[in-house]
Image (cartoon, rainbow, N blue to C red):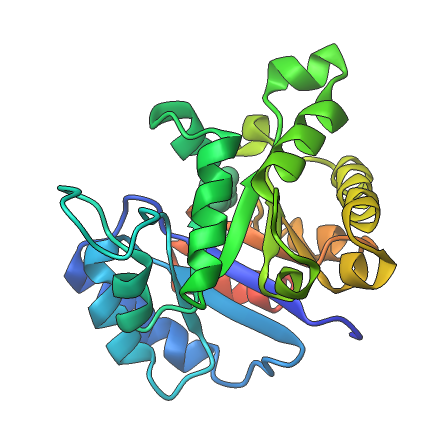
Length: 254
Ligand code: 13P
């Protein structure tokens, strides 16, 4: 394994505090032998679980991320959470622009861009999500959609910051549906994104950005996906909610 893969669990709106503590403790135990220079791991719990999860994961290699943030340090923004708070709670990562946020909470490429820039200012590493709907794939505009989302989300981000960014390609039709993209379908879009990064920045920068695949990743399909040249990890929803299935994914299905 020559690459530093990155496997992250997006817990979405699952896990009460007690459940989160139990899952984090199990993961700490079963992933303790994973070499983070080969496979980096992270979990992204709901905000309210983050302090308990970071406390439990202290002394382990598993990183913690948030699932969203509001792009201001503080202020009168009822119901929102700032990057400073996320950082202070012990998070390294923050997922930005997940398709569920675009679909249900009106996020746009412009708001994603604002959040990515703000996250970087607070030393958080954004996991920026892009991906087409089924309708867009069927119309043959997947690359156009992904290009617009990636270019819009990365607007004004300087080259030096790109090493802190992960891009997650998550085709909307594969999320929570059990319908995984074939390794070839995923690789095609990953290679396209890599090429786009080379155009926007340069080859070296493009090679250093980790591009995760997300959408129905499971223990039995992870190995093939990870064997593709431009797939550098996974953003896992459903299968990250059980310790044994996330372990199997981190260990490439073993
Ligand atoms: P599933 O793995 O449940 O399809 O979810 C993928 C996802 O949206 C991760 O962010």
